[in-house]
Amino acid sequence: MGDFIAYAVIVTPERQQLAAFTVPVISDLKQVIVSGPNFGKAACLDDLGGKQVYVNPLTANYQLLQDINRSWQSSGKSPIEVKASDPNLTEEDILQMVSAGVVPATVTNMPKATLWGASSP
Image (cartoon, rainbow, N blue to C red; front, side, top):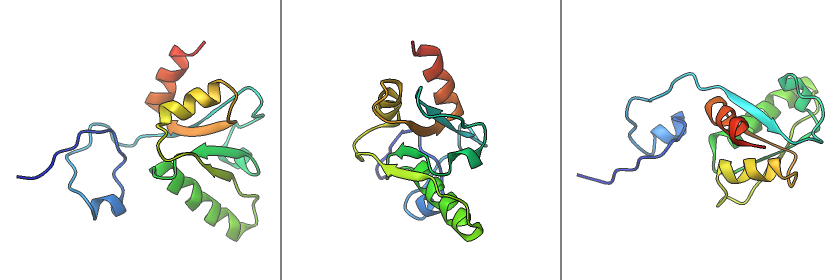
């Protein structure tokens, strides 16, 4: 029969080469920046140029930021300073670090950011 894993993961073409996926529970999931108190202005994607954003290097968010930087490089924009976190950290761990001011910002999905914002002091 095979192994079964239930975990919230973004379906990407690369991952579809490695595993079979069920029909997604949520589609068109929006990614957002969650920043700490000293991050500064970040009203749009362009505001992230030159700023540090910490992300688990094993996530689709990390790849997304790398892709953005590649496209910005060709247009001469200042890249996002993508910092790889410890790969053992979850998005929730990094969100706690942002909240505590240990790291300046991270990327997560909108439902998680909304839930995190409602539960944070």
